[in-house]
Length: 130
Image 1 (cartoon, rainbow, N blue to C red):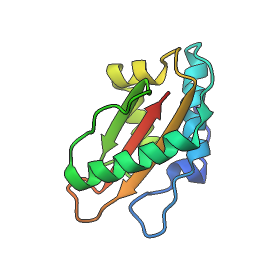
Image 2 (cartoon, one colour):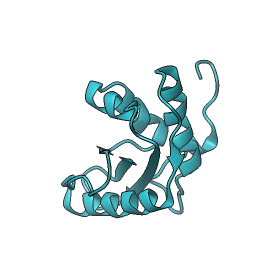
Image 3 (cartoon, rainbow, N blue to C red):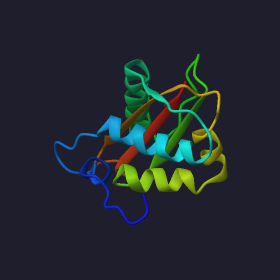
Image 4 (cartoon, helix red, strand yellow):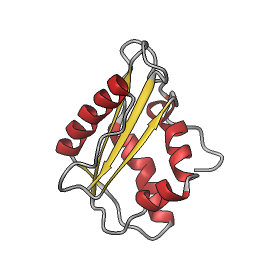
């Protein structure tokens, strides 16, 4: 992806009214990274998307990261980044997060972002791997 412009979905700021996360593109960038490490592609999962949305809303409201939902492999949290590209970069550059992103046993994923202007970090991100 070096030298390529980011797609609008990955560069979309989530701290503006009406912003919508392009979940397909978000999972796509994770899959691109996974392929560079020999991990298989993740399938988008609507149930995990819904769970991620609920966890992101809870995270924005309480400021606390919830426990991993039953039946999932891992959950990655982030706060304060405005775009998925920034969030993904933070995860990729964290050894613990990078290991989770490339977990070879993961086969599906859900992702969400919540904006809360009254919260300390504004934008809250959750990626669930299953």
